[in-house]
Amino acid sequence: MPKLGDLLFKDTVGLTPGAKRRYWSETLAAYLYLLPAILIIVTFHFFPIFYAFFISLNKWSILQERFVGLQNYARLLWDPDLWNSLLVTIWYALGTVPFALAISLFIAILLFQNIQGRGIFRTVYFLPNITSVVAAAVVWGWVFNAQYGVINYFLELIGFQPLQWILEPTGVFKMFLENLGLNVPEWAGGPSLALVAVMIMTIWSAIGFNMIIYLAGLGNISKELYEAARIDGATEWQVFRKITFPLLSPTTFFLLVVSVIRSFRAFDGIYAMTTRNGPAGGPLNTTRTVTVYIYNTAFGAGNPKMGYAAAAAFILMAVVLILTIVQFRYVGEKVHYE
Amino acid sequence: MTSQSYRLLAPRKRARKRQGTWQLRLARWAGLALIYALLTLGALTMVFPFYWMVSTAFKSIQEALIFPPTLVPTEWLWSNFREAWEAAPFPRYFANTTFMASASTLGTLITTVLAAYAFARMRFFGKNVLFILFMATMMMPFEVILIPNFLIIKTLKWYNTFLALIVPWTASVFGIFLLRQFYLSLPKDLFDAAVIDGCSHFRFLWNVAVPLSVPALITVGIFSFLGSWNSLLWPLIVTSNPEMRPIQVGLTAFQSEAGSYYNRMMAAATLAVLPIVAMFLVAQKQFVEGIARTGLKG
Image (cartoon, chains in turn blue, purple):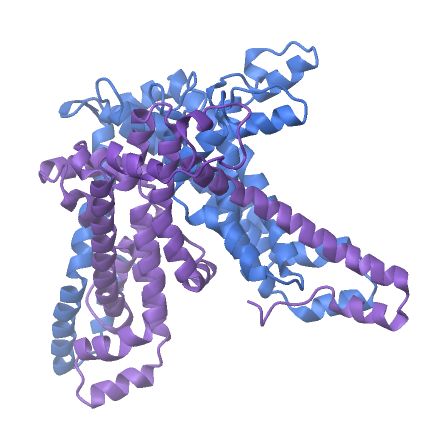
C-alpha cells in the first residue's frame, strides 16, 4: 500500500529548482483545465456520497429533524416492505438476466454466420435498446392491456384464457400449479404476472446491447481454432460447447456483472409501466423493486422520509456490492482467459 | 464487422461441394433456411411492439378499443398525432428535452476534453489522488446520491430550473476515463515535436488532440445525449412544474392524463421515440462501435 505522501510528491523528487518551478506552473495550468470537471464531480458526485451517509443517520423529512445514529438501518432490517421489495428485485434479476444473456448469445451466433442482410437484422435487434424505456413501457403496457391488449388476442388465438398481465398480483407459479389442481401457499407463488410482464419488456430491450457485445467477443475468437475443429470433424454443438462458449466466457462474465447491477437498479421501466393507478410498484406492491421503494419513500405521496430512504439506498448498495464480489469470487474464477 | 467475421460454415461447405451429393446440399440449405427463419422470427418479435405502437397511433378510438383488435388500421388517421400534440404541452416537452440534452452534451464534451487532456498529458501535483477520487465516484450507484443531490438542488434554489436538469450532467467520469486512455495512446513524439515548436498545451489540445479524438468524442457525445434524452428519474425529482418537464416525464404523465385514449397515447409515444430512432439510423455505425468499444451505455 503506497503512502498518500509518496503518491502526492513522487513527481518532485530530485528535480532542479527550475524544473520544480515549471512543475508547479504546470500544476496551476492543469487545475485550470480540470476546474470545470472538478466542480461538477465534487458537487454532484463525490460530496453527495458523504452527505447521503449523513442524511441516513438522521430522522429527515424534507428538513433535518434530529440525529438518530444507526436507527434507520436498524428499523430497515425489520421492515417487511424492504425485504419484500428485495425479493421482488431478486425475482426481477433472475427472470431477466439469464434469459436476456441466453437469447442474445443465440442471436449473436446466428448473426455471425455467413448470411445476407446481417446489417438489417442487427439494426432491428438493436432498436429496442436505444428506445427510451419510458416509451417502451407505455407501448408494452398497451400490448399487455387486460381488456384490449394484443397479447391476450394472441393467447385467445392459440386457445388460452386472456390474462390480466400488469394488473395481476398473483404469482405465476401459483397460477400455473393451481391450473393443474395443486394448492400453492402464498410464499411459493413466485413473481407476480405483472412482474413477468415487466421482465418481458426488460428482456426485449436488453437483447440488443448484449448482442453487440457478444458480436464483438465472437470477432475476437481466433479462426484457426474453428478450422482445426472442423478438420477433426467436430459437430456444431461440440464447437459451441468446447470453443465458442469457453472463449466467450470473459464477455459473458462482463455482461453478467453489468446486467445484475442494472437489474438491481432498474427504475424507469417499472415506474412507467406500473404507475398508472396509485404509486409505482403495483399491483399490491408485487412489482415494487428496492429502487422503486426508495423513490416512493423519499419522493412519493405522503410525508417524505429522506433519512430512511437514504439508509435503504446504502443497504441496496451493500447488496449489489456483495453480489458483485460473489460473482467475481465464484463465477470469475471459471472464466477462461486466453 | 463484415470483414473480420468468420464463416463458420465455409470449410464444411467446401467439403460438401467436393462430395457433391444432393443430400448434403439439401442439409446445407436446410441449415441456412433454419437460420434465416429463426432470425426473421426474432426480428418480427422485436419489431412488433413498434408496429403495434404506430398502427394504434393511426386508429380511431373506436377501432383502438375493440376486441379482438384489428392488426391493420381500417382507416389511417393522422389527426391522432395532432390531438396528442395539443392534448398536452408536447411542443414544450420537446423543446425542453432538446435544450437539456444538447446543453448537457456540449458541457460534457468540454469538461471531458479538458480534464482528460490534463490527466493524460500534464504533470501536476495530486494527479493520481485526484484520478482515483474521480474513479471512485463511478462505483457509487445513482440511488445513493439521489437524495443528497435533490437537497443540494433545493439549497442552490435550482428546483424547477434548467440548471437542475443540465448542470449535474455536464461532466462524465466515464467519458474522462475513455478519452484519457485515447490521449495516452497518442504517440509521445507528436507531443514532443509540438513542444519543441513552442506549441502551448492549449494549442496542442485544440489543434492536434481534439481533431484526432473525434471518434471517441462522438461516442461520448452520443451516450451523453441519449442518456439525457431518455432520462426519467432525475427530471422527475427536480421538476414539478409541467412547463419544465422533459419528454419522458411528460409521456409518463400523459399516460395517466390520456385515460383510455390509447391511440393518442401511442401517437405521443411514437413522437417521443422518433428523434432517437432517426438519430440511430443516421449514426448507427458510431452507436454500435461505441458500445462494442466501451461496453457501456448511458
